[in-house]
Image (tube, one colour):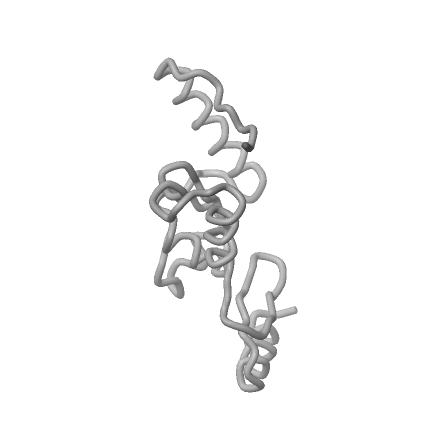
Length: 131
């Protein structure tokens, strides 16, 4: 589809009362007042027992499209992969940093940098077990 076709579909859905968020490969279409960050905060609170501040201190979010904007708003430790650059002009909330690689390679770049930083600072591997 062309960007114009996507915009036409987007606008028609909005006119019908749907919420529409553009991802890098599809449109997320839903009814209701929620988004990625609403559910991430709920999971943090209900399943992990973490309030907003604790969750923000323990989390890094990485994204690639406008549908990640709510996560960039709530998580100061946020990273965009390189292909997010084309979306920045229409985004209010942006990632704190952007890696040089696109898509999955960008995620790998971020993960490698994070692991390298942990090792250089003398931190032990993180305990990711719940409970």
